[in-house]
Amino acid sequence: MEYSEKVMDHFMNPRNVGEIENASGVGTVGNAKCGDIMKVSLQIADGIIQDAKFRTFGCGAAVATSSMATELVKGKTIQEALEVTNKAVMEALDGLPPVKVHCSCLAEEALHAALWDYAEKNNIKIEGLKPPVNDVDELHHHGHEEG
Ligand code: FES
Image (tube, rainbow, N blue to C red; front, side):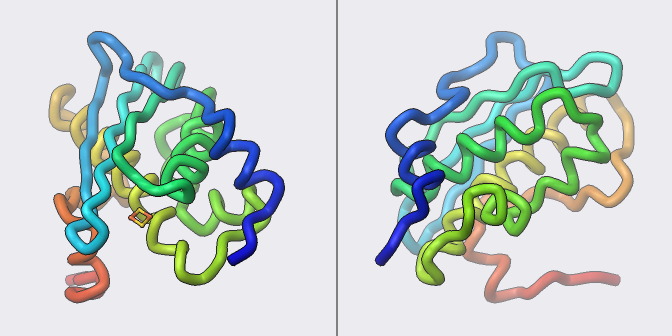
């Protein structure tokens, strides 16, 4: 298994580790298959993500992808942040080994869950945002159910 230099860098020196106090939105998701957990907290003001932090009980690829994902969403609008998909994060990291692709979903889903939490707290609807899942692994079994 080969990791890119960027993945190694974000794994060894992860950015934005921690929790935001009085966060605007918090999201926690897990993957029942590997047992890993990801928690993302966001500080949002004027529709802009001012700060993003994460904590994970996860593998190295989960650490690297959340580090990069939190870096990418900072300073972005909510709509722009929705474009920070696991694919975008992987590209920013110069790729992940195929067996580690699912780890990048943990970061994306935790980010979405935090945005969902923010929307609920503020009684707003974020266009294009789906309700969060507790177990990322379910995504693969159910597929994406669209009405
Ligand atoms: Fe579980 Fe990577 S093995 S997130």
